[in-house]
Image (cartoon, rainbow, N blue to C red; front, side, top):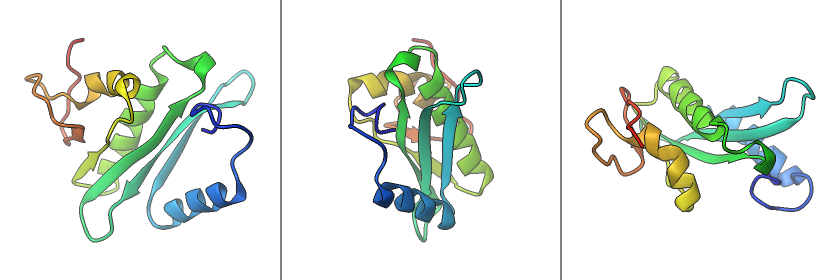
Length: 129
């Protein structure tokens, strides 16, 4: 994720421990690995909100040389599916910029094309571009 977010170097020990803590608290951490090389090229997290049925999708990132292939959208959809399967009633995210919003747009719009303000509903359907 560091490279995908334009941050230098490897993740810090603190970052790794924070990810492990998220998993221990019921969070879901996913990574995308390039089959040919085994290199991690993307990832993301679904973090449950304590005491509620909400889960936040965060940190979705794809390495620059692997963008434009639908990996960010696939990661987001899979994190959402996993969160809902684990008992979340609603999974939500807040795109960090317009580029991220374009990735999420086909996923976060309902069947009628209504704007769901970044909230994933259990029965979402992609909207046309």
